[in-house]
Length: 476
Image (cartoon, rainbow, N blue to C red; front, side):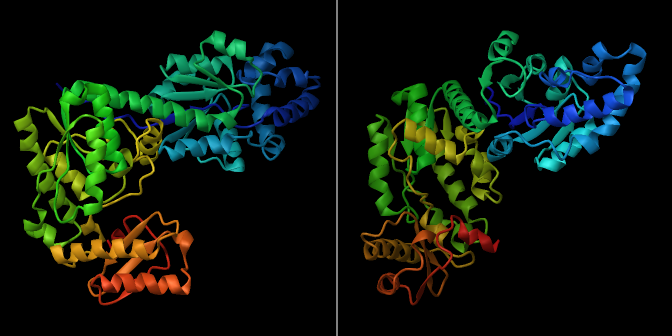
C-alpha cells in the first residue's frame, strides 16, 4: 500500500467587486463621468445593482457596437481618478484574508476587472494578496484557479459559481452583490454566507472537518499502528483517532521511559491510554548512552528520536503492527529546525496528523470536541529541552530540573500557573512562568528562587520575559 499523500496547501481565491470591495459607488461615478463625455445618460443605479459581468456587456445596451471598445478604454482611463479612494473594503474582507493566512494559505484575487485598476484597489485598501489575475470572467476563471491550485473560490455572482465549479473548487458565495441566495444555490454554489464576516468561522470549521476526515481515512488505510505516545495533546488525539478508525485491537500505545520523561507525566498518560482500551507499552529507551544526545548540541533531538524509533520499530514488528506513528502536527513540520522529525522519517515512522494538515490549534479543538482530557494540557517537552545547548545532559541535571519544577509549583500554590519551565543554564537556573503573572510579588519571587536553589541549583533568576515555548532555540 502506498502511503497517503500529505494534505495539499490551502489556496483560496476571491472575486473582487462586491466580494472584497464595495465597488458600486466608484463604478457609478465613472459611469457618470463617461456619460458626460459621450452625451449618454446611463442608468447608473440599474447598471451597478449587479456588478460582475465584463464592462463591454454592461455598456452594450446603451452604446452603438462600434463605440463600445473605445468607451471601455476611456472608462478604464477615468477609473483611477473616480473609483479608487472612494471604494472601501467590505466588512469582513480583511478578516477573511487573515483567516486564510492563519491556516498558512495562499490568497488569490481572480476578477473580471482591468488588472491595473484592480491592483490600485488592492493597494488602497491594503489587502495582503499573493496573486492577482484580472480580465477573466465566468468559466474563464477556472483556468487560473486550476493553475494556482485553488480549492476554494469566493464570489458574489452566479458567474463566480460557474468559475469555481468548472475548476473543481468549492464554491462559496456571499450575498453582498446583486445575486440572491436562491439564484446562487440554483447555480450550484456549495455554501452561501451573508457576508465575509462569516467566512473565517466557516473556514475554520470546514478545514477541521476536512482534515479530521483525512486523518480517519489515512488511519483506516494503515491497517494497524503503534503510536509513539508521550501523553501530550498531539499523541493523545492521534491515539484516540486510531482507536476510532481501527478499533483498540489494532492499536497500541508505547511510551519510552527514560530519565528525560518526568515522573509526573507517566501515570496520567498511562491512565488515558488504558481508558481507550489499547495495549500500553513502556519500553526503556537509552538515549543517554548516545554521545550525540549527551553532548546536547543543536541536533540533540535527532538522537533522542532515533533512539525511540530504534526501540519502537522492532517492537511494532514483534506485535504485528504495520506502522509506528508519531504525533508530529502540521505546525511542527514548518516550525524550522526540527531534527527529531528527520530522525523519525529516516526510520519509516508516519505522521498522520501532519499528513492530514492538522495544526496544533486544530488538534486542541478536536480534542475538546472529543472530550479528551488533554485538549488544554500545557505543552510538556522532555526534560532535556530545559538544558542549554552545549551543556552536557546527564541524569543529575534532569533530576535537578524535575525537582526544581515540582518545588517551584509548590511555592506558587494557589497562583493560577499554567506554564512553567526551569531552564538549566549550566551554573544557574532560569525560571520561566506565565508572563501575565510577572513580576511576582517580592515574597513569592523569593520563595520561587529558594525552591530552585533547594533543588540543587547554585543560583536562580526569574526570566522577566515569561514562558516561551522553545526559548532555548533562540540561541540557534
